Amino acid sequence: MQSTYAARLGRIQWTMVMAAVLALAAMLLPLHATAQAARAAPVAQPKPANTVLVLGDSLSAAYGLAPSQGWVALTAARMSKTNPGWRVMNASISGETTAGGAARIEGELKRVRPKVVVIALGANDGLRGLPLAQTRANLDRMIRAAKQGGARVLLVGMRMPPNYGRDYTQGFEANYGALAKQESVALVPFLLEPVAADRANFQADNLHPVASAQPKIRDHVWKGLSPLLK
Image 1 (cartoon, rainbow, N blue to C red):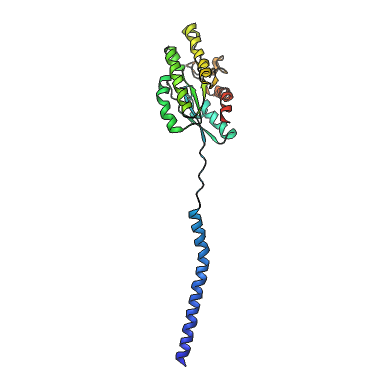
Image 2 (cartoon, rainbow, N blue to C red):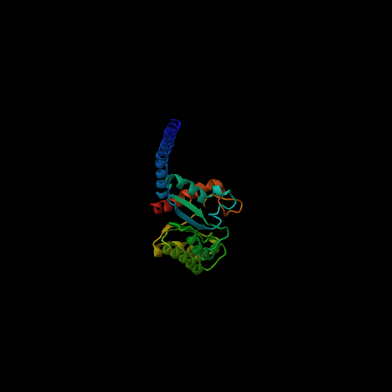
């Protein structure tokens, strides 16, 4: 009698254990399937931003100012609101010449892979009285490299004061227009056009614009840059 009762009890206990195991398996199976599906599903990657690369000299490197005060940083701040799929990389170096820019551009193109390249160089060439043909050849090399890399180009020009002589100053300014036409790229003829006439817009060196003048330069360049972001 007792053995029969014990056998029945054993069967009941075994049945209860198996039921518990099956119930636990039923609970875990959807979780396992969900985990498997999560592992199998591709992870969404953030879309890389389109980049504007700025290659300039101290006028674009915010010389004498906090970096956030320069026209390039102000352009980046505006772009984050008006063109959120874009960013700005400022590769400007104080004292840079067109020869330096021409030497650096291939590396910068590989590093940044920009959609738009802003070339704002030549002021230091002019201040040093470097040959016009040399400056033009360097700018041309940069434009061609950017275009070959698939980027649109904005060429930003500069002017020299009249004490460099009429032939030099006119030839210097004409280089930018001629290159823009030859290479079919966008042009801002003179970077400092909206501020150049007022001495109060410049620092003590009379070369570099003060912080309050930077928004005017940003707005000036923006007219040539914004169509290239579409």
